[in-house]
Length: 336
Ligand code: NAD
Ligand code: TDX
Image (cartoon, rainbow, N blue to C red; front, side):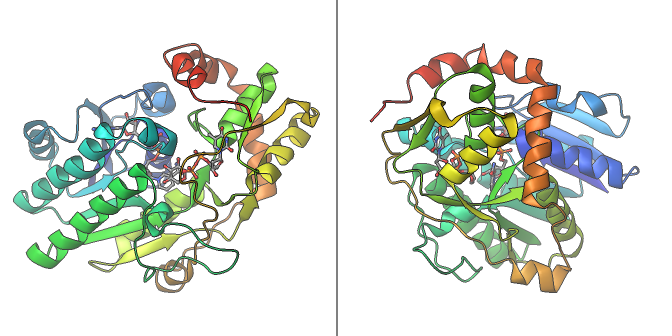
């Protein structure tokens, strides 16, 4: 199979590419990535010599390049990870979120149709369902009620995928996963930000009261779920992906501090995120029953290994934190 993986130089895409090359040595993987601030080819150093792996530097909004790449590499399936992915950035400036997450998706869908590809898989998020109260879970039937410009742009992309399936009868799947964690996670997101700031002795910003809940899944468990969807997902179906691992943000911060072995004195409660969703929790019954998916990581082990990865790969995150990222970070937080 020849797979076009868009956004493959980011956190989840790069872990997915390594997973697939390892599991399917005969597959050809084309990583199509714009290399935005979040794209980093260092994430893929371990596979760059693999003759089955190819990189194309491009924007998913570029119709010509997308179509040329599909034809040049005889692509069978597109898996679309490419997105602007950070909620806080979408609150400050949403234009690029609409361009990439909505218009970019449309370009990929047209290309899937025009080149008669076998399948298109849209990597979406639980955030499209909005926020939960203290109880309940998101199922595939939960109405879409996105609350941030980021999640609204992802929901819009999902609706286009649905519409192309209904209109053109194309073979599509949408996956909606909960929060991922693991190696190569860009240090603007909660877990890598807390780990790296703690290692640098910097303040640890916790939004609001720190009681918002996220449902964490190891990135390799996400990769194994996407693999099953590519091969066995039923045309037109949505699959929620999550491992029943809900944690309050402050609990995550405390677990990380315990693992690193430092006190809580660096924690700073800062102004809350605007429109901050209170709780996410995925019901993964459908993918478990229909595709026989099971996560293998236990959170306590996965987070320990992740902290160790950031200890062992300090030059990876220090290069990011010393670059353009610094000015973004400094503009973000106001202590309460
Ligand atoms: P990321 O920000 O780490 O990576 C995004 C990648 O997309 C980068 O390599 C970037 O260069 C590339 N990209 C951005 N715009 C592009 C464009 N116009 N053309 C081509 N490439 C472009 O994101 P991530 O955390 O790896 O998330 C990947 C996907 O998974 C996203 O679609 C996101 O919405 C979804 N998702 C993420 C999570 C999570 O916890 N991180 C959870 C559920 C779903
Ligand atoms: O400094 C911080 N302090 C803090 O308290 C940051 C960066 C975050 N938070 C809180 C906000 C959230 O409640 O931690 C929680 C997690 O925040 P993020 O890491 O920004 O993730 P989230 O907003 O939940 O979105 C993530 O999961 C779903 C990804 O970034 C999305 O791409 C994915 O769709």
